[in-house]
Image (tube, rainbow, N blue to C red):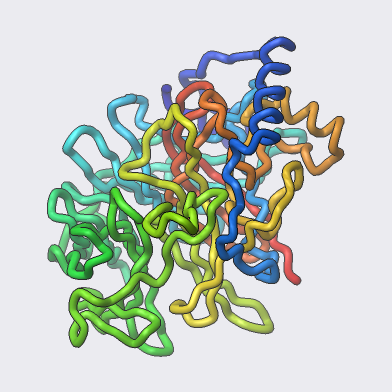
Length: 447
C-alpha cells in the first residue's frame, strides 16, 4: 500500500497513492455478521476460563476507549495507517512517540526488511481536524528544517538496530534499542546534525543480554524511564520471543550497567538465572493463556508511562497480547491486540479487567484496543441495533476469529497530553492487508 495522505494546513489531505476502495454488498455483510454471531454463540471466541481477570477499578483516564483515527473518510472500512514504507517487503513498526513542543512530535521507529533493521525518525504535527471530518486529528509530515511535506520522509538514526526507546536530555537523544542477531539490548547517544540528520556520539551493545531462564535467549523491545526521585533509569523489556513471551524489569544508575529485578527481591547479581518476569500471560480471552496449559499465551512490546493526577501517580503499562515472533499478517484464528496494566511502584502490576459481555464498548477492559469489525457498514448496523455505543468504526475487546476482518494492533507508544492520550502503534492486516503506523486518541476522563 502506498503512503497514506498527509493533511495540509488547509485541512485537506495532500495528494498521494490512494488504496482502492472496497464496498461490500448486503450479502457479504450479512455473511460476515452471521459468521461472527455464530462463532460467538458456538464458543469459538476465546473462552474466559478461570484466569485472573484483572482490576475493574483502574482509573478510567488512559484506559479506554482509544479510538483509531481514520485516514480515509470515504471508505466503508477503517484505514487507520497514516504512514508506511510503500514497500510490502519493508515494515515500519515498533514506534516511539516523543513530544517536542506544542503540536510538534517525533516518531522513532524501526524499518524491518529481510535481515536489515534500522531506526528512523519522522517529525510530525498532530493538529485538530476540521469540523465534519471523520477523525479528530490530522497528521502533518514535517521535515527536519520545519517544512510541511506531502509524504513522510524519515531520517536514518541508527543502523542495525530496532525497537527504539528514546529519552531527550539537553540536546542528546538517548536510545535503547534491540540489537540485531545477538538477542540483546543496546544503547546509543545521538545528536542532530546540521542538515536534519543524526550523528552518533557513543554506542554500546549489548548493555542488557538474556541471562534468565524465562528469557529463552532473547531480550528486546525496551521501554525506559528516568526516575528523578531515585536518580535511576528503569527499564521494562520483553523476553522469550517465540515462547511464553513475558515482560521483565531492570534498573541502572547510568543507563548502561543494568541489574534485573523481580517482585520476590531477587536480582541478576545475586540470583543469576532465577530472576522472574514482572508480568506474564494470565488472561484467556486475548492473551490466550489457558489455566490448564501453564506455558500458554504471550505478552510483549511494553511501553510504560507515568500518569499523574492531583490524587496520585500511577504507572501505566501498555503492551501487546498474543504476539508470537515478529508482527505479521495473521490469516488464521488469532488476533493480536493491545492491553493495559496499572501499578503504584512499577513493580507490582494489576491488569485491566477482562469482565465484559459481547456487544459492549471497552472502557476498563483488556484489550483496550482491538478491532472487532473494520467495516463501517457493519458498525452502522450495530449502531442501529445497539445504540450509540457503536457509532465508531472500531469497538474493542472482543476477539473475532474471522480471517478477513482480523486486524493486529501491536507495539503501542502512548503519550499523556493532559486533555488527550495519543497512542501510535503498529497495525497489520485488514481487508487491504495494510501494515504501518497508526494513531489512536483517547479523551481524558477521571474517576
